[in-house]
Image (cartoon, rainbow, N blue to C red; front, side, top):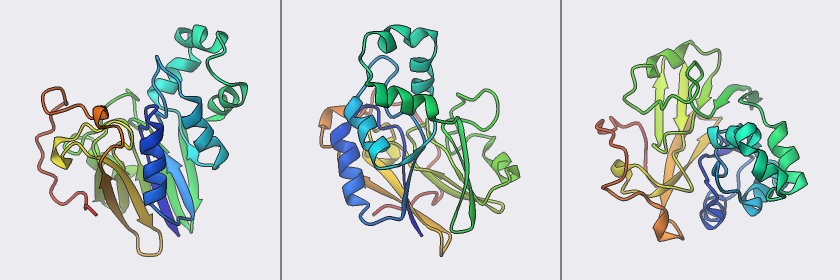
Length: 217
């Protein structure tokens, strides 16, 4: 099976459509959360994920929308009834099997605090080998990563909506995984909306050079 993986769309509909188009024919698409912003919703973005049956987990921004802090957005009709029901149906953790591979997907961290940013150099990365899965998918950092940790393939597709990674020239990214070979690759593209990257001065800095943790096509 060929699996497309996206994360952190953050209301960027043109970039989402570009990513889905560029990944071509895939058997399944997964989204590791943060489709929108906690302070700004995009029904068209959520429509695409919902209507295409893309398996998605809650990101921290969706959690805020569903919390007491998101009452006004929910009450004022900003979110369509279909998309509000979709958000309410999403799990924090998705555990599934794809072509026999055990897949575990979460937006931030599998452990408390759940909003921890597991950058490629984070000391908790080796702990992911203890998760009972063949593949662990993360989002949240906007930093793409592919790494084999023990028997677990760890994938962070980066962001296909808001680029933050200076190592990747602030390009938007998504991942493709081939379950038959057990390999994955990061693909990058320029945002259709050039204003969506953070830029060098405002991006959070990650000092690790990558150590071959992601490819580029």
